[in-house]
Image 1 (cartoon, rainbow, N blue to C red):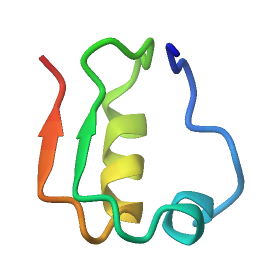
Image 2: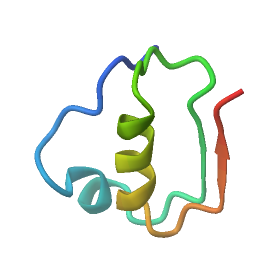
Image 3: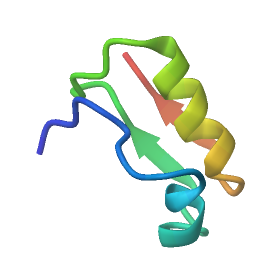
Image 4: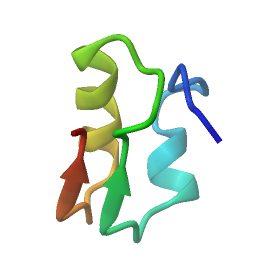
Length: 52
């Protein structure tokens, strides 16, 4: 599934996925580093981010 927006309200990612350690955004359709930053700040357990 390709993602093109972070959607949701406020800290929804933090609430839905509190234990995510790795995320691969390399094939997402996000067009803003600000969106990537928002995702990362909500996922407090995140250890690995792939954007390449």
